[in-house]
Length: 430
Image (cartoon, rainbow, N blue to C red; front, side, top):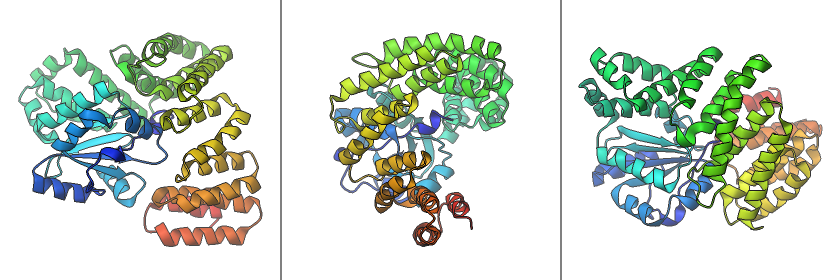
């Protein structure tokens, strides 16, 4: 999904224990000795939500208290270990906070940017419940409606609608009847129906399920569901699509006014809300409204930063995305060097700037930036950078240099990330 795929997080380095484990196996081993749960924080350096969570949530007295209760392990999603465990735990989006018990059994998962007021109670509920997912399933089968909702929520966090609905169908009819009468359970079921339809490329089913979800009390998740509605309705007639989306525009506008562009936002992921609103305006053919929401977001984030890009990296990266979405290329080209200077140890901004120039047919300007990014990249992101370097070198008729880039990168990471390796080889033409 356009929006969901952007979703990401990183832990606050200032408050971690000095010996915090950085692999999942090490975290589980440490938890087994301490007889305590594990909180896995899957992160990635390209992830904008990382910086929101780091700055606004993963700190303070609540974070200190959480460190005293669980083993916290920052897991890099771009590393081989992180990628393997994300697949094993069926984590499909970032940020992802997965709680395991001391034996490595899953207790629960939280996804996406969250406010402090939402994140800590949700984590506490998972930890204090002290029951594995299998344990919740057993309680649900015995008639616990709260446990039914917990299990359905876990399947929704994995975006696995088929498995979640299949499990629900195994419950006794009396339990399903009682559960379906509860609004929070019916909402989880609708979300699972949506996930199943999306993965089956069932646009009609996706539209129907998305409308059910959007009619419920989904709070800060509305932009993500609207994003799926946008994709599912893409091939509808203009009149039919307009009827669907007009209702959502009003709801999104209200969210921006009351939950985002205020002194104390109730929702965390401003970017998804802004982009979803602009996408709805675009789909409705309202270029004036589309420009207005993007201009408003750009102006707001500039005021927030006050010219200091290091003040809040989440906000700084939001500015980049809003300028991209608004096609304000000259301002974006002026911003990139400032971002590179503000975050000199990171591969992301030279990579993004280089890729932007390359896509605009400027390989000679792009190549030095991509080479600078290559010096700082690693794991999966090293392969992404290499792919763009190869494209730039080929555009400059430097095939031999492109082949050497591929050879060097495969020597470093070739045994990992087979899909990315295949893409790199295809780019080279081998």
